[in-house]
View (cartoon, rainbow, N blue to C red):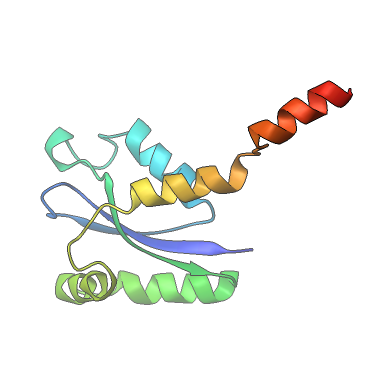
Length: 117
């Protein structure tokens, strides 16, 4: 089963939170539904700036423990290596998740199916 290691931050990049989950989209929804769970309104963790997908649970747990021990500068360096502008990756992730779960039938085929039925 695949696991995700992620780093989420607030709009001012003041806090960097490392996490481990099996469904990244669901976890990000949790953070948006509970904005003041960890911090006050000014420091809401709502920007996904880094994530890794790991297919082995044991390896994911080891990687999570390793990344959790990083200093702030080490985390920043890791983020900048893949996301130099600290762009929020949530939008692209939600788009990709929607593409995988949505069933789509082209309109030309849908009208043919109705005509033959």
